[in-house]
Length: 206
Image (cartoon, rainbow, N blue to C red; front, top):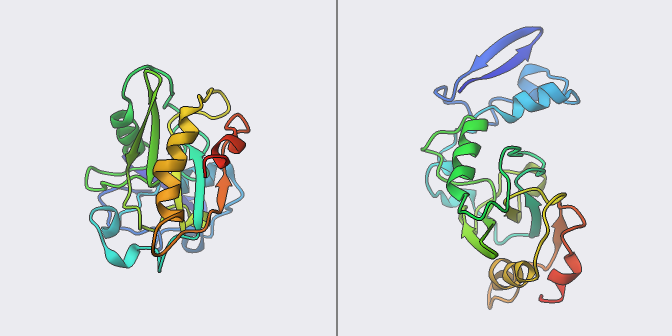
């Protein structure tokens, strides 16, 4: 897969085979109008080929710990939306989510981490939580770089959540960090999901 980047009305084709980093490719390099939806979409597709997405690198970790949490979904998240991934199919779709992420954003099988730390999927009325990024790793979301990212597979504007979701997020994704003996993370949560996600139900378990 390749991505087209425009500079002074000239299209530059960027291939995943080109070993560019996100720092090397950006609006500052191409003088792009980042307010353009089209340009923003193209920039999102630039492959983030970095060593720390291919293997664990300690220099890409929180220092000393995360500043909080952010909860989002796969369809509406601010940087890596996956519009074709739908929840509530009654089957395990996480492999498809990974393949779709690689396809849409020009990743290869060498990039083994997802942008978020935890991925939550509903399978036959049971929420399955996966660790999809090293839990002490910086995230790929610039505005949430120092936060632990929790991502719901699906569209929070359409999905209906059952109570067990909030219990599991609290006890498996948040409290192990906020209630730890050392390097505690603040109980500071940003919600990038629809109000259908009942944050008061989550917070009563914290």
